[in-house]
Image 1 (cartoon, one colour):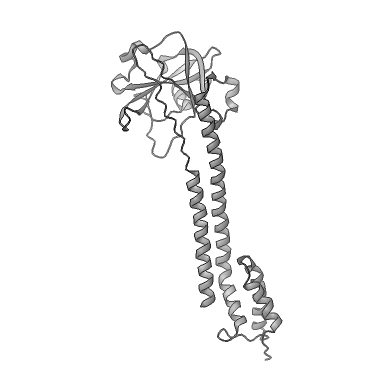
Image 2 (cartoon, rainbow, N blue to C red; image 1 turned 30 degrees about the horizontal axis):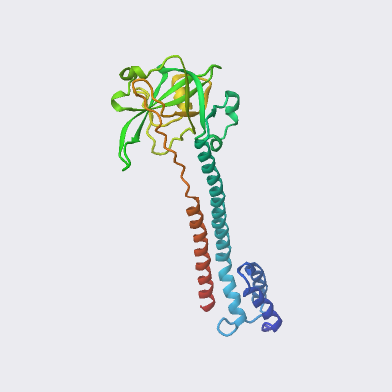
Length: 299
């Protein structure tokens, strides 16, 4: 059997690929495969103890798979970081729009013909006015709390959600405000059951989504745990209902209850922290892979 050692040209060609940036591993793998084929055919004699060239072949073959997986993971982590930066830009734009809306004069509520084109981020917390007549027999009660003092104290009770019949025959659910637990039933607050045409000023609110731990609505007691106009009106068999809710402002009503104006404007904005977390994990991955490469080359 005829044996030969790697030529100087062969060695330079391989080391140029193996010692370059991590993205050259694929090229180095192909070169290493060629020399492995020569060794299997008896045309190349390698000794991992005294042949530097063959040591580099071993290192590259050992690092190729970890390099591929690390590159995939790195691209995913960086992609998630960029996505969070995009969400940060969108959220800051939304917060700016909400702040401007809260300071501006109220506008007319969108007509029924415009409802299908509405996007939540475009109308959330928009200050509006709407006129109609309350349908008190179909009011629903949403269980919740209100803040009672600056130290974070709270009180349990119910928010009264009442359909407002509009002149064109459509409807919108109005969160008229909070009532204590003892005043849940409308008979206990008869003065607040306004009859006839009314004009409401308030904020448009996006429907809530049911979470994993959201309790099931108790329809027998007319207690809701989700402010969703579709679910509320479906339970009453109502149609042509707006896909949003209007939170009434603090305008007093006869007998005080329901008490409006308890809307808490809260839009979480943690996207910068999320982006830094993803980019930080990407840097950690680069560091770990670099340490792995150095250790493999020294082994």
